[in-house]
Length: 208
Image (cartoon, rainbow, N blue to C red; front, side):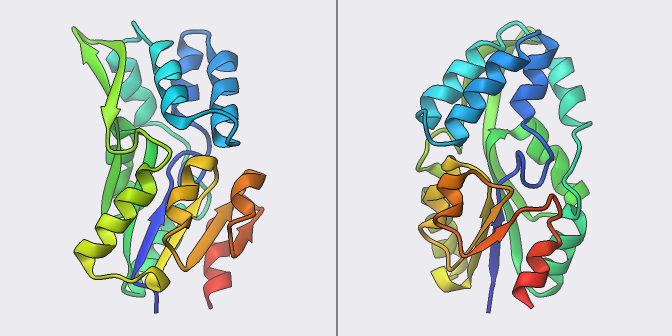
């Protein structure tokens, strides 16, 4: 019986990449988007790519960050899927290599129990180009998942994880149910459930 479900945020619970939306405000959407894609496909180190992308955001007004974070397009079926998993007695958590400005705001809207993500450093109302937090490295999601499993007394076979990119591989290593959602090939290879449509409720069909 599944007891814990962990979802990625960007391109999983949310339709798009938060950092790419920020970059578009500075006219850097293509440049940052390219780095994001390289990182998610496993061709760039996640930590280095995150630092590189955040550096490019230096000077962006934090008020714009908040506005974008509070107006993101959530993935089709996200609310319904989380509600159903909780109804089945599961704890639902979000792990994101993205940012708390987005994941904490979305928590009550989408209904998950907790979020672990990164924080964009700001000073005098503007981004400094620095970042820190819970999900800085390629291994962070797996590391946090193991700690959460120990804390909650949940076994690997009682855990579902769902993501789309290379930085989700580390949590796939510690879960019995591994969902690749509209995912890069590198993640599909490690999954035992593959969803190719942008509809999270498709996961529920696979669990019945």
